[in-house]
Image (tube, rainbow, N blue to C red):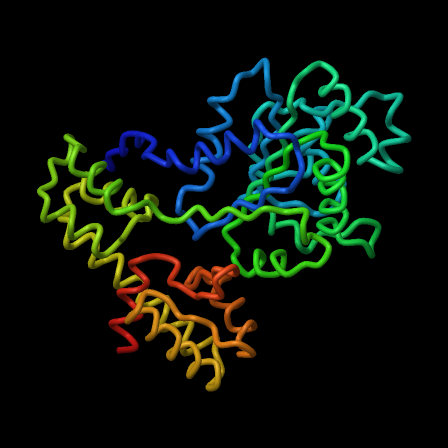
Amino acid sequence: MTKKLPQLTFINRQKEQKYLKNYFDSIPNAILFLYGPKSCGKTTLIEKVINNLEEKKYATNYINLRGTIIENFNSFLNIFFQENSNKGVLQAITLNIGFFKLNLKDRKIFEKNPFKIMEDQLRKINEKGIKPIIIIDEIQNLKSIYMNGDRRLLDELFSFFIRLTKETHLANIVLATSDSYFIEEIYNSVKLEKTSEFYLVDHLKKSDILEWLTNYKEYNFSKKQVDYIYNYLGGSPWEIQQILVEIKNGETVEKSIEKRIKILKGKIYDFYEDQLDKKQQVIFKKISKEIAKKGFYKRISGEKIFKLIKIAIEKDFWFYEASEQKIIANSRSLEHVFGKIFT
């Protein structure tokens, strides 16, 4: 019988918590894009911060779109409004649902302009001395949704959120994503220039991982074992948790990590051989080899590789730091795999 892993305690993130708290305390003036490698702990961080906010001072509407099926604009709105909060949405996670409420008398106005209803209700919340916060996690999942067939939902949302922050100062908006190509598009958007802030949430630092695992009495790891785990998995809390489950069920540290690396090697080989053409293979090998050697690849000015970057990001192999024009592996374990395959 498989044993369940005890719930892990929250690890550090003091700097990130302080940044978010300061943002929530400030007068709304910019959309905050929170981004970082997949499984680095963005969602855990968000939930930690909003769960520690004073309920009487803040009104929070948090929506996690991970694993959510949204077929159209109406099914997206159903997440926000309590009346239909469970229709048309699969596995949507919300906190403090009921932030927006729809009365029957508002139905006709809602159908024509739902954003007006939302703005009016935000004004009423502000009048009570309460600070509204809207958070959408994995915002990139709305990229393919359109309103009335021709208007992109994201374009309309961004316009609305700019109004709520930069113009009317009615609500603080946090949009989180692990899709760094999406952040690249946003980062270079003329429409969002001077209306947005960007904050990178990276994997945990080595000191955090060492303290966490060294003091994890249930496992009684030696320093050598902790160093071994960090060397191969870095600061990815999700990956470390996966091997902790296996170790708890009798696997050794070395064997568990060996299995993880083997699985990733298979995924990289399949991707490289089956989904890339010859030209893309050459570029993917070149960049991945550089990442394995230096920890990153600095994009050359004018280099036309964004199509490949997009594909590799969608497959969770690469992460792109738009502000520094750097490509890195999505995890330390992938760095090792790139080294084994391409060097």
